[in-house]
Length: 159
Length: 159
DNA sequence: CAAAATTATATTGCGTCCAATTAGATTTTG
DNA sequence: CAAAATCTAATTGGACGCAATATAATTTTG
Image (cartoon, rainbow over all chains, first blue to last red; front, side, top):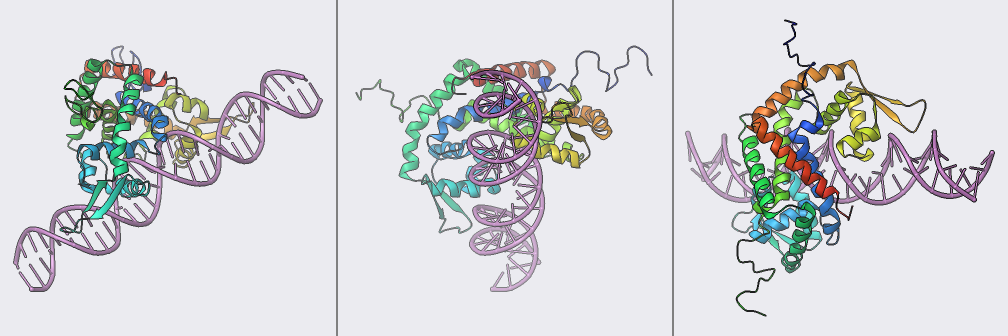
């Protein structure tokens, strides 16, 4: 029970598995913050936050989505999106109009100002690309690995 | 100016580079949320949030850190940590004592209850490991790529 | 058709996050 | 030594992010 080959939970031999640096989740958490910090000065110029920018990215792909539709694209719920979209509306980037044919739904539409911002977004994309110092191939590989991981985590029984 | 070879910003030929799915940053953002969702039911058992769990991970590695020390480990500032640590104190996992020799500093120390939780943490680690469905090698490779990316982003001039 | 179930959005409350400010302690420097 | 600069936490305010709840509209079903 207590011979030399025992590996007890609080007495690991080869490095501590609970070390922050060894945790994949912490690496992801840290990079997410790092991206946020990198985006901030770029987005501040337009008075946007990163999640607001994500909403605009989604709308540039497909305009006139419902709140639910945007939520499915980004993995966010109405508790996050409702106030965020009101701020985007106040800032003049989108309009929020309740659907006539189904009044439960609110259609989010880009304003001309919101559409115009798409051009600037390429500048931001370029800056971020430079900041990552990744080749297209490296970025693609990492993205692919992250997509797999995302799928695995979301396929968990508990959810 | 408008010949066939022109690539204007709003008229990309091979796929829209702004597509959400193609963005590395969005992949990271999504996985961070996915990890959070996966951790939540595991941490709820102990009444912990994920950032609180990160603080405990840091303290299990090195107890009796200052607020600043913990902040450097996790990349968080006092605006986040001060209230978080008070909640951990209220929950009985840590104590907060001002340093006698330098009263600017507050030393965070694990309580016996906080120390005891480390054993349970291995169970959480195991569950998360299963949820990722990654081999040790895959996880290590991804972690390494993320560490590089993190370093690159943080080495940016603008910061 | 009317009651029940479902759907879409909004609201509330709590816990991060960060920027900016404040307050107190310590160190530096003239 | 005393003023200035620096350092450490805490606080405040604005914006996510999510769970839980509320509300109104629509669909299902008996």
